[in-house]
Length: 482
Image 1 (cartoon, helix red, strand yellow):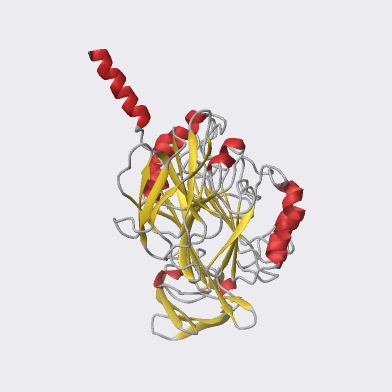
Image 2 (tube, helix red, strand yellow; image 1 turned 90 degrees about the vertical axis):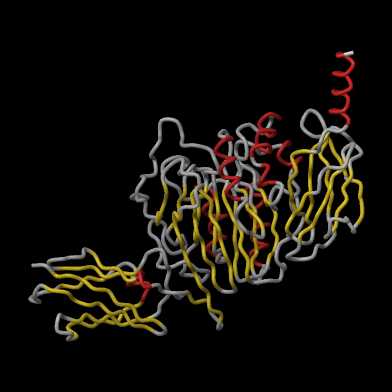
């Protein structure tokens, strides 16, 4: 009798096994082309869905294809969806699952939205689960996954662990993927729904063009396609993402050197704004890079004009740790001598980058897995026939002076986390009696690098720096100690 019960239980498990590995992709943008994918052992699964718990949109059979070595992937492509809504769905795999929900994105014509980028979850599923749980708390229209999802893309067990560990995040968010050196291949392409040929592709959202490239193969084939995408867009923002970065410190530093004259030149020629990568297991933000101007020094500011530079962001630690034997190849202080480095976080620091666009304004915050801010950046474009970068907002803490106290010379500067255009401002220094003793006019992007003031024969005491420009006025007290 006991044996019979065991057989009945096993039969029920096989017949009514819940669908798993639920995730979302799109053949186009987040509202037109959204597709849900799940895994099961059956071939006749279906889905019912609607904007209410009554699933008023109806029930539909899924399309299926073979998965891994066992079972099947099931896909269902939704019709064009209502923006900023919640869809409710249930999956049939021998029995109907509990009701699940998915929040649709804001309208695809909006110019105010957020997206999140990062990658490299492979190897460390505990770390990946921590990052995934954190990402699940964020509000974003979609995510860009920059590759190396698993350590070995040919192993079913690697993918099973990835889905299980990331379930809370994967079942609720739309992800656009690019392949990395650890997982790219048949299994990767078989399970993710993406636009175009799914290896490299482009989609539009709001006032931005997003381009996914594949840094594993077919470089020459992708290049004319990339040029065509950049030549034919009139979008305000151009964001490109792929796995291997062009500019990184230490590990993998020269992986993409061979394509500086093609891929990166296209980025410079057509004013790509953001290049988002993974591959190296840390966080790094580049200084503005434009190889058309200099191959060994940054330009003054980020932007899409000929003299402005690309913002490269490497967010390569969605769980994976530091390389063996090289625990601190990016200094914990976030400083290093390479000319292209603006800011970074140490090896193995789990992180992600959140970008918010509001018309001509882009803001990026980089966080660690605990939600601690690692880096922050703001760029603003004003369209009046030309693109001009200028401060979006200059906070009270933006005006800096060092050292303070000082005994002879002091450097006055602006926060390097902000990026400024050729906007003039006046600097005034007042002595202890309130008399103006020094004045200078300087462009804000030059002031970011710092200007020096020599106290000369002025006596010890408290002095006041005042920075005044159109729409802002900042003050900072400094102490002269002789």
